[in-house]
Image 1: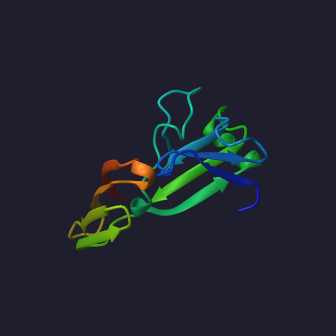
Image 2: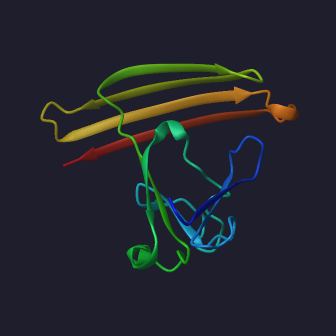
Image 3: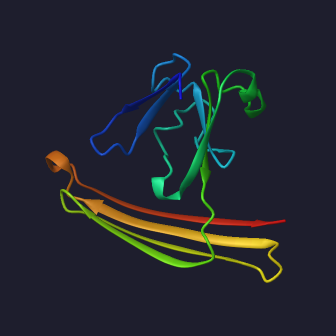
Length: 150
């Protein structure tokens, strides 16, 4: 999308700095949301430095610039990036991945709905680790629970 700049901060790309509309990445003037909820611990603290949703749980993203971002408050001079999480399908699914530098990842997805279809519940749990490039290893665990009702 035009006007978006993403700068990797670490070799593992766990922390991502996002700049919008000409503001430098890491300037903290872009509001980051997950399903419409701010992810930063405080209003004037850098959003993307503390939390980035795992790519396994993302179903899409909205980028709002200009007047369309005003409904989300004052801390969005650059704009708003709203990560939209997936709702797991009914049933259970397992995913495993292996990669370079002893990278291992396991993911379990479970979802279901009420008999009437008015309520849904889903869980995506991921565990990943790697020795890392240049001896910069990492371990990650992430659990997302998503529920809703009409």
